[in-house]
Amino acid sequence: MTTSVDMRSWYVPVEIITLRRWVVAAFIVNVLLLTVDYLRADSELLVLGGLSCLLFASLRASLPEVNNEARRNLSLFISAVLLGIASYRILIVELTLFNIWIHCWALIPSGLSLYWLSGRPVTVWTSRKLSDSAIEFGLMRNAQLTKKFEETSTHITLLHFVAITVVPLIWIIDIAFSEGNALGGQIGDSFTTEHFSKILNGESFWIWFRNSLIVSVGTALLGLFIAIPAGYAFSRYKFTGRDASMFSFLLVQMFPGIIILVPYFLVMKTLGLLNSHLGLILAYCVTALPLCVWMLKGFFDTIPRELEEAAALDGCNQFQVFTKVVLPLSTPAIAVTALFSFLAAWNEFLLALTFNTSNDMYTLPVGLASLISSTGQAWGDFAAASLLVSLPVALLFLFFQKFLIDGLSAGGVKG
Image (cartoon, rainbow, N blue to C red):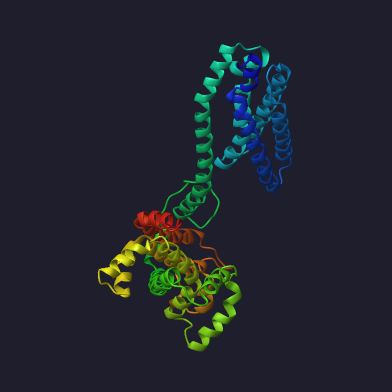
């Protein structure tokens, strides 16, 4: 039979359990945010930030145990000091969204610690000897609140990742719709569409767009034409050099593309493919082909061989089995591979810059880079063009969303 002592050792208020995790997370984040104060060369904020980190470490070490009111009082004092420092820091800085976000990592954890440590569940747990019924109630309460606290922490974490992703996009949008070409200024302080009008009414953007579209579509089509039969052959047939070839495909992905830039250039010059769409298409296909073959092979491995055997028994030859059975089932993987090849060519900069010396043959990445020179920086035009370049990619992802989910999930497991 369980004794009251055993039950007391089991029960810890959910607030204390949560603080033991969240205070550690707040300490780590505040240590990382010290780099911001260091880069700003603000000695006062740097000292206060370092002091906050030490106090968070002290708070974690002083969190109370059962029937230990003294440690609870010490934790309350540290939380109050932390809250005061965080409040003072947010008063002496400029109230921007970034500064508010930084200081909330000290303000909210310290305020939450002060609130929970002074609450009735923790107060009773540290100052009294609880009865069996009170412990049972506390355990039941823990079970109800633990899930809510875990969901809250998960959503807070995800929101921070979303903010890290969205904030640069908001900044680019603001620059694109702001007057002039300055990178600074308050978000939303002005509005104009002059940058978009300048880009869309100019001839260069549409030349770059045409070149990128030709090269990207050509790369995707040629890559699929080679990668589909290659992936199927590696998946279904055993032949000499099969394993070595697959390993070599992985091996070449380990090396950065810049090391083959000079050989590429010499080959293209010898073949007369500089300043041509075909040269870029061939170069991009060679670069993207190994990963495309691996992706398709992984998907072909998941297709049961029994389906091909049944089609063969019905009178289909090998080509018909491949075109009428395997390819229709492989549509998601083919869509993912095509999208990967398209994006690899659409976003590539170094090879396009090296192989093309004429403005009439620039692709979009090279054309955008030309807007930022040593003599002048058209940041507004650059931001507007960047948004226009990203629009086709976003539309492709929306269109291929279903195929992406099916292709990536089905290709990851065999059977």
